[in-house]
Length: 430
Image (tube, rainbow, N blue to C red; front, side, top):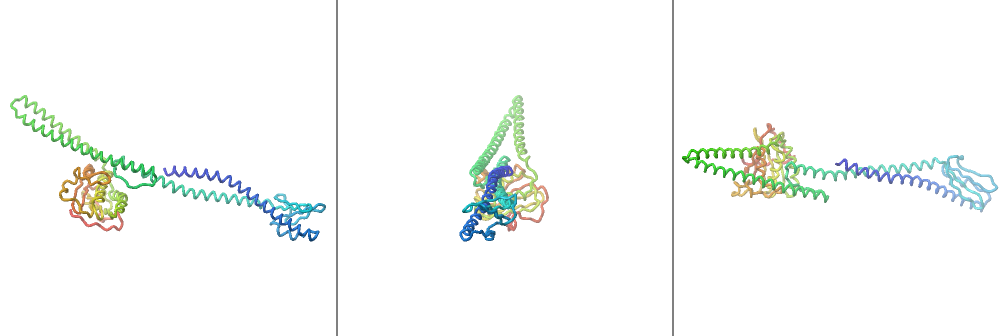
């Protein structure tokens, strides 16, 4: 995209420069001719004035007084009626240009200069025009590069955000570009992300409600059938056992469908470089924290890989960070604590935390953190569980949320902070 924009701008600039350069070169060429001829005419005029003064005082013309006005390599010829031509200066040349002026009382002054001098001045003017054209092209190229970058970077950013939305990343972005059309697209993407996230949350809630209600009704149905099975009539008992078999099959089908849905959601989980993901997340979140007057620190050992889906992990961490930004206080910290089989990602802040009556219900519906992504903690937990992990409230005040993921490799024991020179956060209680 950047190359296409740059090529288009440069083609337009080149067309404009060429369109202006050719007429400017022709004008410069002719302007040099006019200036040179005017220079000769001016010299002849001064010579004619000098000769007129000499004629008033004496009959003979002193040519030595005229030599100082003759240009280098020039030749002056004086023609008077009834007198032989007189010349002073360089030898006559066949390749020259000249100017003439009439003398009072008859005759002519002819001043000629070799054509080589005029050609040199012409080409000097053309070279100056060419240099100006080249300089203009260089400046225009620099401006085109800057303009192409300013246009392509927002477009690429919007394209990446659209791709993330298509892959299931429903975070909103506060960045705007100062271009009305692109800002409008960014607003639409943010609105779509919020709407899709809310739709998925409602669908998850609906699926959970349906599953719960169906299981409850099937359990009740089985209990009633087991009571009927106590009937002494063998035919009734046989029918009841057949109905119980169908009920068991229906329960098995429901369990298989739920297990299949969970396995399909978890199919996208892969080995994930956790430090790189947290560094990208910190790059996006740090300006928001700074705008709110909050500090944000990330501490993660190097070479940590987990089994997870990048989009789901980003969504869950984004919901926790938004929750800390909106409802918390003080520094926001993300700390990674690896062990042999699992990795714990802790998100904490220095606020009052979760009220005691809500501790057991913080992940339930209706207890949303009102984060800017539109995702509640319940959906964040569901996303982590879809990858085989779990999300827990490890401490209520100050709040510490923990994401438990399966480790893919052994961790390096020497931690390297993602954020250089960031002080290590205090170890939270387990």
